[in-house]
Every structure is written in structure tokens, then in C-alpha cells.
Length: 450
Image 1 (tube, rainbow, N blue to C red):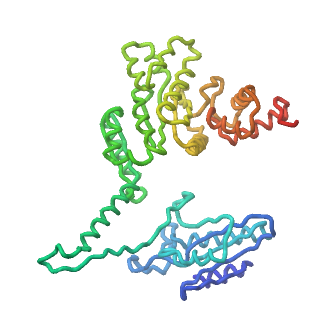
Image 2 (cartoon, rainbow, N blue to C red):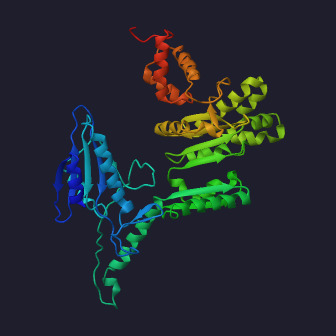
Image 3 (cartoon, rainbow, N blue to C red):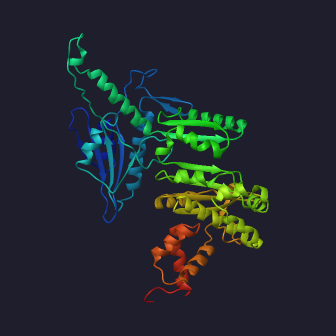
């Protein structure tokens, strides 16, 4: 394999380096040098495969069936190596790029990655893409692996006098039990609570279909299905699953009503690095605010009675007041960073998503995810503080207004405006510089020294 790749890449003008510290296990590095001034990219793929003993048929004779190639390593990962070789050759065929293109065809990926380790002793790059098959899912990180040997020491003793000895097998049992507990601690627990038994069964069927599609549920994942009201069922279910000692992401969908007590969010916030999304509909809350018999439920949802002041406000202020009050409630519950989004269905009916996190980075990531929502599917996001805005698209007029309002309080740096956009609006920090440039060019604002 290494010889074949070497001949092909040399024919296409690549500089070849042959590495073979372990005899019979060569790795190949092929370089298309850049003209200068650019960054380098390494494409990495492994030449070896797993064994052929369990293969059904002749593993080394490729076959085409139903438009697909079958053979040992066709998927993992001869196809990847072929793709990266062809891509690199095409990219450099018309002349050098500014940066180096480095191909690493390595040995031993299936065991200890000694091929890549040998390559990295002599070659490096600004970035790397490992062409592993991933079902077309871009994978940004990998947990890695480690091998270790454990030696349990004991002391032999006569069978009738065991107290004089140390049983290494029993001691090993303690180690294995602790190792299993550590593995449990690293598990992902998915806890689903649904008040309607039929809907819960549908959730179970959907979950089974998804895990079957991807080859079964991973050993590191547990899925629990629970029937009952969220207020009474969720926290005990999380505790039973051992989830109250690790970061929690909780999506609390109230179907528009205020039946999610703030105490649930408060308990989740007490677990480090946790996040929560709560949904509620302002129309339902407005009705509840005018019904004395049901206001106690609203008090539990908001963690107090301040929300009841909505009855005294003019209609055009009610929605903004409720959202703002609930944001303050989540902060009081222990989530210092809070965002809110108004989601509209095709009929224009609104429901609010209020997101709370203890992580500044989590806030940024969530906002990035929200902006990837496809607006053509009938759902749009808008800033609830701007009733004239229809959907949250690249139109940044509301952000412009927010920036002008912020500058009205005094001088601000660009970084302070980016932070304001992140924490106080539905926009991303990256939206700020273009708006600031537009305001500067129109003389609506001035920069220091201008």
C-alpha cells in the first residue's frame, strides 16, 4: 500500500518521505511545498485495516454491489486515502498554493498509532484533517485512548490459614469495582419525562429507531422514560440516574403554561456547568395573571409574585415585562447568563425560549446554534423587545438601535459592544463590527480620535 501510494504521489509531483522505524510497517509523507506566506495543512489517513479472519468471503478481492464497493478496508479507510490523494493532487495541479499540503499515509492506526507518532516527530502543520469515515459528520475532537497495566500484589498462605496471606484476586475485585464506577460516572444519561403515557411510548419508539439506525445504544449512554408531571418526577428521576453530580442540560417544555416550578431550575443550577431551556407562552400567562385561582402556579414558575404586576401594565408592555421578569428569575435561580428568544409558528403564535447557563462559552455556543435554525421550515426567531421585527434574519436594524442606545450611556469599546450584543440581544458578537462600520460611515457615531 505504501509503495503504491508513493509511486502515485511521486508521479503527481509530491516530495516523498518514507518512514519505517518498525520494519514492515512503513508510513509515507508526501509534500507539495507552497510558494510561501500561507498556512500548511496535513491530510492524515491510515494504510492498515483490521484482520480478515472474520470476513465473509475473500476480503482482498473488491466487489461492486448495488453501486457500492465491498472489501476489507474499502470504508475504513482506503476510500478516505484515495479521496485525500486526489484532492491534494487536484488542488496543486495548476501550481503551488501559498502553504504546504502534507499527506500522511500512516501505519498502525488500529493499535497504538505508532505511524502518526513517528510522522509527528519530523513533520507538523498548522491544521490537520484526519480522513476517518464518520458518516459525513464533521468531528472536531476525539477523546483519545490509553493502555495501562495494573499489577495487584498478594502473599501466598496455606489454605487452612488464609489470614496469614493476602488474596490478590479479591484485591483486584476492589479495583475492578472502582473502575466500573468511574465508567458509570462518565456516562450520558438521557431522562425523558412525559405526562401522557401514549406520548411517552411514542418517544420510546422514536428513541429505539434512532439508536437502531446508528448501530444500537452506546454502552456509555442510558435512556430513562418516566410518566408523570415534571414538577414531581424530574428531579427524583435525575437523582436515581446519578445525574445530579455531573453537568445537566435540561429542556423544560411547559407547552406554554407555567407548570415548571423555578425550584427545578434552581436545583439544576446548583450542579456545576449545567444549562436549562424553559418554554412558556405569554398569552397563557396573561390569562393566568387575571385569574386569581391560578396565580399560585405562576408564583412557583417565577419564584415570586412580582410577575403579577403585569395586570397593571398597558397591553403593549405586558409581553416584554413577562419575558424580562422570567429572565431575572432564572438569574436569581443561579444562572448568571440568560438569553430569551421568541419563536413564531406559521400562524404567528408565539412561544418563548428562555435559556440559562453558568458558562459564558455556553452562551456563545447556544446563540450560534440558534442562528443556524432554518427559517424556511415555518419557525423564526425575533427579538421580543422589538415588536416591529418579523424574523431574525441578517437584518440588523434592531442591533443598530441597541448599539446606539448603549453608546447613549457613554463611550464603549468595540469589545464592550460585542459583549452587550451577546448578553443583551439575540445577535451574535460577530454581527457588531459591520453595524459599527455602517454607523461610522454615516457619521451616526464617531470613533476615538476621529
